[in-house]
Structure formats: structure tokens, C-alpha cells
Image 1 (spheres, rainbow, N blue to C red):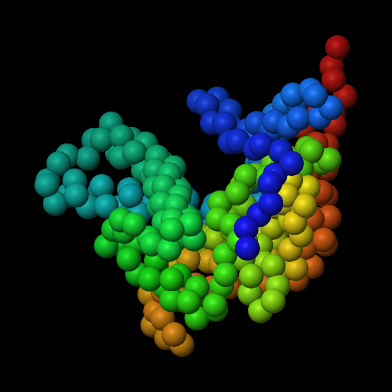
Image 2: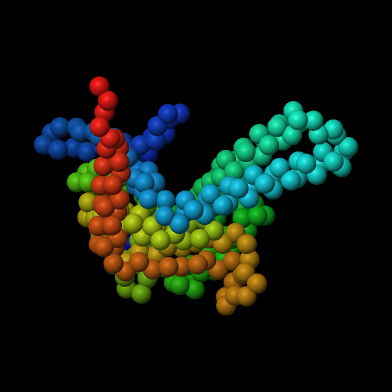
Length: 267
């Protein structure tokens, strides 16, 4: 019902300039340590549908911000000088980054609440905006009859040089399932690669293997039509985690190959 003792001690380290996982272990009386990149860092090399979607989203965010600022200026009868227009446009360019940071913070908070539910059975403090999504997740957990094995768990794969933090693992219908919570607007095609990487790292760190992976997308807005709950999560299942892991290795190889220029260096 719980994970065995880990082979490695894995810890996320975040500084102003870097983000990596520190992995420590003991071998033949020697204390060893290594720094490894995270799974999500590696997968940035293949943006997939996320890259295209973000480009369109960023344009909409900037345009919406510019529109609101122009309307505000007109309502307040402020003179739109060339300098004022430039200032509005510069401010609008910053909006996508602000929105991304806010969305990231919101996602982190939702993940933390779900992790508390896994580890203590209670969500703790939940804001008014978080109440619907969290109730939807709790209702789904109850109906699916999940038996949690672990919550947020740092893992590492020294054999292939990466680490990360898997969101959860649980028993469902007699199978051990690797779970990944998502708070994005959609589940991307590259998401199974992340699960594949965690699957292998969990096996190496804890000696535990999983039968399949579930990607669970937390809904931030209620559905107009629903079967059980207006905030019922979207769930997609990855059955072939070995194939997902091999695909992750292809992405990792691409990242390594693209880290060096392919052009002839001028003398």
C-alpha cells in the first residue's frame, strides 16, 4: 500500500539561474551525488501542439490587454499621443507572461491541495475559485474507488540521466496506476512521454513498476453537460508505458543533439 525504501534520495533544487534535481545515494561505503535535469525540461524540445496553441493564445492575450487599455483611455478622455500608444503596446506585450505565471501558480496550488487529500484525506484551505475543481476531483476519486500508494514523489533514472517528481500512484481495478494531474486547458499528445519517463524512474528508484498511466485534467470551469459532476476531470489512459518511455528517450536524444550547433564553426 506504500512505496518501499528508495534506492536514491532525490531533491528538487531551484535557484535564480537554474532548476535541477540533486540525487544522492550510497554505494560500497561511498556517498555519491549527481545533478540531473528534470523530465519537463527535456520535453521542452518538442513543444508539439502546445507551441502552436501558445502562439495564438499569446496574441489574443496581448490584443485583449491593448484593447482594454485603449478603451479605458478613451472613456477617461486621455489624449492618445504617440508616446501613450507606445506605452500601451509595450504594456500589452507583457500580458502573456503575466498570465502564464498566474496560471502556473494556480496549477501549483491545485496540485498541492490534491496532494494533501492523498496524504491526509482532507483538502485543507480551499479558495472559492478552487472549490469547484477540487470537489470535482474528490467526487471522481470516490467514484473511481482509488486506493492511493503515493502522492508527490521525486524519482530519478541514473541509467539515462534525468529526474522528476511524479504526481501520484494508486491501485485501481487491481492495477498499479501512475497518475499525472494536469490543470491545463487540454491534454497534449506529448504528455504520455512524461508518464513514460516517470514510469522508468519509479522502477529504478523504488523497484516498483506500473501497469498503466492516467492523465487527469482538472477542470477550472464547470461543464454545461455532465454525467456525475460539473467539474468532473477529463481522464486519458496510457496503457503502453514502455513505448511512452522509449519515445521520451527519442526526445532526450534530440535535446542532446540540438545542444550543439550543426553548422561549421568559423575560425
